[in-house]
Image (cartoon, rainbow, N blue to C red):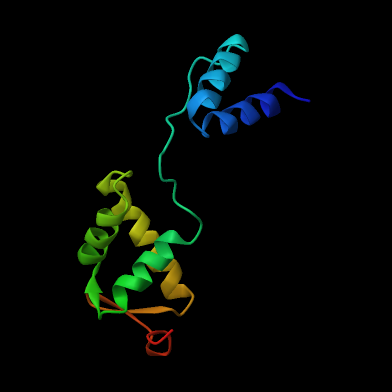
Length: 116
């Protein structure tokens, strides 16, 4: 097994918390891994941004600023300036996919999705 694979397994074990976290950190230190990444309490799951945006748009059209505020309320673990760009990228993907529309500054959900 490669060293990187072992380190990644220990880092994953560390995320479980409690005694497991302490043991994993000691083992990582023994292996010479001194710079440990920050553990995020509520990591984003695949599709979360899409679901949050579509959920916000079900109430009616909103500006990007309103959508960012909606996401910031739900994602307290991420800096709001980064969330602006995440929302922007997600809106672009949703628009390309035909799920949302844009008119001026307003974004809305495609009518066929509103009742889902």
